[in-house]
Length: 244
Image 1 (cartoon, rainbow, N blue to C red):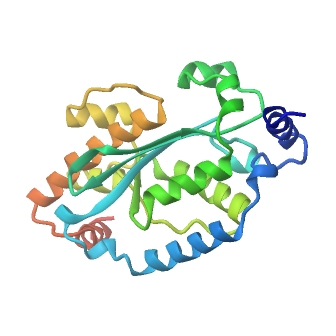
Image 2: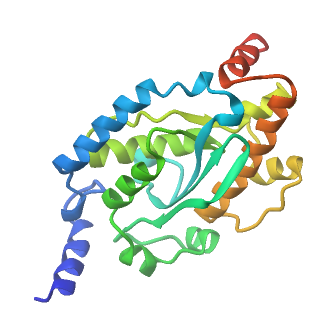
Protein backbone atom coordinates (compact mmCIF):
# COMPACT_ATOMS: atom_id res chain seq x y z
CA UNK A 1 0.00 0.00 0.00
CA UNK A 2 1.50 3.39 -1.02
CA UNK A 3 1.67 6.36 1.31
CA UNK A 4 -1.25 8.18 -0.36
CA UNK A 5 -3.36 5.02 -0.26
CA UNK A 6 -2.55 4.53 3.41
CA UNK A 7 -3.52 8.12 4.30
CA UNK A 8 -6.79 7.73 2.41
CA UNK A 9 -7.44 4.41 4.19
CA UNK A 10 -7.01 6.02 7.62
CA UNK A 11 -9.22 8.93 6.62
CA UNK A 12 -11.98 6.55 5.59
CA UNK A 13 -11.58 4.52 8.76
CA UNK A 14 -11.79 7.62 10.96
CA UNK A 15 -15.49 7.85 10.19
CA UNK A 16 -16.09 4.24 11.33
CA UNK A 17 -14.21 4.05 14.59
CA UNK A 18 -16.83 5.61 16.83
CA UNK A 19 -19.48 8.29 17.27
CA UNK A 20 -16.96 11.07 17.90
CA UNK A 21 -16.74 12.81 14.54
CA UNK A 22 -13.39 14.37 15.43
CA UNK A 23 -11.67 11.08 16.23
CA UNK A 24 -9.09 9.55 13.92
CA UNK A 25 -5.49 8.45 13.62
CA UNK A 26 -4.31 11.97 12.87
CA UNK A 27 -6.57 13.47 15.55
CA UNK A 28 -4.55 12.17 18.51
CA UNK A 29 -3.05 14.83 20.75
CA UNK A 30 0.68 14.87 21.40
CA UNK A 31 2.89 16.35 24.06
CA UNK A 32 3.97 19.26 21.86
CA UNK A 33 0.37 20.36 21.34
CA UNK A 34 -0.45 19.93 25.02
CA UNK A 35 2.59 21.99 26.02
CA UNK A 36 1.62 24.74 23.56
CA UNK A 37 -1.96 24.89 24.83
CA UNK A 38 -0.88 25.03 28.47
CA UNK A 39 1.49 27.91 27.73
CA UNK A 40 -1.26 29.66 25.78
CA UNK A 41 -3.66 29.33 28.71
CA UNK A 42 -1.09 30.92 31.02
CA UNK A 43 -0.63 33.82 28.61
CA UNK A 44 -4.39 34.37 28.35
CA UNK A 45 -4.64 34.78 32.12
CA UNK A 46 -2.29 37.76 32.03
CA UNK A 47 -3.71 39.27 28.84
CA UNK A 48 -6.01 41.89 30.34
CA UNK A 49 -7.93 42.96 27.24
CA UNK A 50 -10.63 44.66 29.35
CA UNK A 51 -8.30 47.50 30.34
CA UNK A 52 -6.40 47.83 27.06
CA UNK A 53 -7.08 51.20 25.35
CA UNK A 54 -9.59 50.61 22.55
CA UNK A 55 -7.26 51.95 19.86
CA UNK A 56 -4.59 49.42 20.95
CA UNK A 57 -6.90 46.44 21.46
CA UNK A 58 -5.77 43.41 19.47
CA UNK A 59 -8.48 40.90 18.55
CA UNK A 60 -9.05 38.09 16.10
CA UNK A 61 -12.43 38.20 14.41
CA UNK A 62 -13.57 34.75 13.33
CA UNK A 63 -16.42 32.75 11.88
CA UNK A 64 -17.30 29.07 11.61
CA UNK A 65 -19.31 27.37 8.91
CA UNK A 66 -21.04 24.31 10.37
CA UNK A 67 -23.50 21.61 9.36
CA UNK A 68 -26.05 22.79 11.92
CA UNK A 69 -26.48 24.46 15.28
CA UNK A 70 -26.00 21.65 17.79
CA UNK A 71 -22.47 20.25 18.25
CA UNK A 72 -23.63 17.91 21.02
CA UNK A 73 -26.03 16.29 18.55
CA UNK A 74 -23.39 15.64 15.90
CA UNK A 75 -23.27 18.88 13.94
CA UNK A 76 -19.69 19.72 12.99
CA UNK A 77 -17.41 22.50 11.84
CA UNK A 78 -16.60 22.42 8.13
CA UNK A 79 -14.55 25.61 7.81
CA UNK A 80 -12.90 28.30 9.93
CA UNK A 81 -12.05 31.84 8.85
CA UNK A 82 -10.41 34.66 10.82
CA UNK A 83 -8.78 38.06 10.47
CA UNK A 84 -6.74 40.19 12.88
CA UNK A 85 -7.50 43.73 14.01
CA UNK A 86 -5.79 46.39 16.11
CA UNK A 87 -8.32 48.89 17.37
CA UNK A 88 -10.69 49.58 14.47
CA UNK A 89 -8.01 48.80 11.87
CA UNK A 90 -8.42 45.56 9.93
CA UNK A 91 -5.09 43.90 9.10
CA UNK A 92 -5.91 42.54 5.66
CA UNK A 93 -2.66 40.58 5.40
CA UNK A 94 -3.28 38.65 8.64
CA UNK A 95 -5.94 36.09 7.76
CA UNK A 96 -6.68 32.44 8.46
CA UNK A 97 -8.84 30.06 6.48
CA UNK A 98 -9.20 26.29 6.32
CA UNK A 99 -11.74 23.65 5.47
CA UNK A 100 -12.05 20.85 8.04
CA UNK A 101 -11.85 17.20 7.06
CA UNK A 102 -14.98 15.08 7.31
CA UNK A 103 -15.72 11.61 5.89
CA UNK A 104 -19.44 12.15 6.48
CA UNK A 105 -21.99 13.21 3.89
CA UNK A 106 -22.94 16.86 3.58
CA UNK A 107 -26.53 17.93 3.08
CA UNK A 108 -27.37 19.61 -0.19
CA UNK A 109 -28.74 22.58 1.73
CA UNK A 110 -25.44 23.23 3.52
CA UNK A 111 -23.41 22.56 0.38
CA UNK A 112 -25.41 25.13 -1.60
CA UNK A 113 -25.35 27.65 1.26
CA UNK A 114 -21.59 27.48 1.85
CA UNK A 115 -20.46 26.47 -1.64
CA UNK A 116 -18.50 23.61 -0.04
CA UNK A 117 -18.72 20.08 -1.43
CA UNK A 118 -18.12 16.69 0.19
CA UNK A 119 -15.05 15.96 -1.90
CA UNK A 120 -13.35 19.14 -0.65
CA UNK A 121 -13.98 18.10 2.96
CA UNK A 122 -12.57 14.62 2.36
CA UNK A 123 -9.32 16.19 1.11
CA UNK A 124 -9.20 18.85 3.83
CA UNK A 125 -6.84 18.79 6.86
CA UNK A 126 -8.04 16.93 9.94
CA UNK A 127 -9.81 18.89 12.67
CA UNK A 128 -6.89 18.44 15.10
CA UNK A 129 -4.47 20.05 12.63
CA UNK A 130 -6.83 22.91 11.79
CA UNK A 131 -7.56 23.62 15.45
CA UNK A 132 -3.88 23.79 16.39
CA UNK A 133 -3.11 26.02 13.39
CA UNK A 134 -5.99 28.28 14.43
CA UNK A 135 -4.72 28.56 18.00
CA UNK A 136 -1.23 29.37 16.72
CA UNK A 137 -2.76 32.13 14.58
CA UNK A 138 -4.90 33.53 17.41
CA UNK A 139 -2.25 33.23 20.16
CA UNK A 140 -3.54 34.83 23.37
CA UNK A 141 -5.71 37.50 21.74
CA UNK A 142 -9.40 37.88 22.48
CA UNK A 143 -11.80 36.60 19.83
CA UNK A 144 -14.73 38.45 18.28
CA UNK A 145 -17.70 36.83 16.56
CA UNK A 146 -21.23 37.65 15.44
CA UNK A 147 -23.76 35.50 17.33
CA UNK A 148 -20.80 34.32 19.41
CA UNK A 149 -22.67 31.61 21.35
CA UNK A 150 -22.72 29.53 18.16
CA UNK A 151 -18.96 29.78 17.68
CA UNK A 152 -18.28 29.27 21.38
CA UNK A 153 -20.32 26.04 21.59
CA UNK A 154 -18.47 24.47 18.65
CA UNK A 155 -15.03 25.63 19.82
CA UNK A 156 -15.67 24.20 23.28
CA UNK A 157 -16.71 20.86 21.81
CA UNK A 158 -13.77 20.64 19.38
CA UNK A 159 -11.20 21.68 21.97
CA UNK A 160 -12.39 19.12 24.49
CA UNK A 161 -12.77 16.29 21.94
CA UNK A 162 -9.35 16.85 20.40
CA UNK A 163 -7.20 18.21 23.23
CA UNK A 164 -9.08 17.12 26.36
CA UNK A 165 -8.83 20.65 27.73
CA UNK A 166 -11.22 23.54 28.10
CA UNK A 167 -11.57 26.27 25.50
CA UNK A 168 -10.55 29.38 27.44
CA UNK A 169 -10.25 32.18 24.90
CA UNK A 170 -12.50 35.13 25.62
CA UNK A 171 -15.10 35.57 22.86
CA UNK A 172 -16.78 38.95 22.53
CA UNK A 173 -20.08 39.15 20.66
CA UNK A 174 -20.49 42.09 18.28
CA UNK A 175 -23.93 42.66 19.88
CA UNK A 176 -22.01 43.86 22.93
CA UNK A 177 -20.96 47.00 21.03
CA UNK A 178 -24.19 47.29 19.02
CA UNK A 179 -26.03 47.84 22.30
CA UNK A 180 -24.19 51.14 22.73
CA UNK A 181 -26.30 52.55 19.90
CA UNK A 182 -29.47 50.71 20.94
CA UNK A 183 -29.58 49.05 24.41
CA UNK A 184 -32.64 47.02 23.36
CA UNK A 185 -30.76 45.09 20.66
CA UNK A 186 -30.50 41.41 21.54
CA UNK A 187 -29.36 39.78 18.32
CA UNK A 188 -29.71 40.68 14.66
CA UNK A 189 -28.66 38.85 11.47
CA UNK A 190 -25.23 39.65 10.07
CA UNK A 191 -26.78 41.17 6.93
CA UNK A 192 -28.88 43.57 9.04
CA UNK A 193 -25.88 44.60 11.12
CA UNK A 194 -23.95 45.30 7.91
CA UNK A 195 -26.85 47.37 6.59
CA UNK A 196 -26.89 49.47 9.76
CA UNK A 197 -23.19 50.19 9.27
CA UNK A 198 -23.34 50.80 5.50
CA UNK A 199 -21.23 47.71 4.77
CA UNK A 200 -21.62 45.89 1.46
CA UNK A 201 -22.43 42.21 2.01
CA UNK A 202 -19.82 40.28 0.00
CA UNK A 203 -18.88 36.58 0.10
CA UNK A 204 -21.61 35.69 2.59
CA UNK A 205 -21.60 32.21 4.19
CA UNK A 206 -17.91 31.80 3.53
CA UNK A 207 -16.04 31.59 6.85
CA UNK A 208 -13.39 34.14 5.92
CA UNK A 209 -15.91 36.32 4.09
CA UNK A 210 -18.19 36.43 7.13
CA UNK A 211 -15.21 37.05 9.42
CA UNK A 212 -14.29 40.10 7.32
CA UNK A 213 -17.87 41.41 7.43
CA UNK A 214 -17.89 40.96 11.19
CA UNK A 215 -14.55 42.77 11.42
CA UNK A 216 -16.02 45.77 9.62
CA UNK A 217 -18.97 45.79 12.04
CA UNK A 218 -16.65 45.54 15.04
CA UNK A 219 -14.46 48.36 13.70
CA UNK A 220 -17.49 50.58 13.03
CA UNK A 221 -18.86 50.26 16.55
CA UNK A 222 -15.46 50.39 18.22
CA UNK A 223 -14.96 53.77 16.56
CA UNK A 224 -18.45 54.75 17.77
CA UNK A 225 -17.53 53.72 21.34
CA UNK A 226 -14.42 55.88 21.21
CA UNK A 227 -16.43 58.85 19.95
CA UNK A 228 -18.65 58.47 23.02
CA UNK A 229 -15.61 58.74 25.26
CA UNK A 230 -15.10 55.12 26.26
CA UNK A 231 -11.47 54.24 26.80
CA UNK A 232 -11.63 50.45 27.17
CA UNK A 233 -13.94 47.43 27.19
CA UNK A 234 -14.34 47.48 30.96
CA UNK A 235 -15.94 50.93 30.86
CA UNK A 236 -18.38 49.69 28.20
CA UNK A 237 -19.23 46.56 30.20
CA UNK A 238 -19.88 48.64 33.32
CA UNK A 239 -22.14 51.05 31.42
CA UNK A 240 -24.17 48.29 29.76
CA UNK A 241 -24.53 46.43 33.08
CA UNK A 242 -26.25 49.49 34.57
CA UNK A 243 -28.90 49.75 31.82
CA UNK A 244 -30.00 46.11 31.72
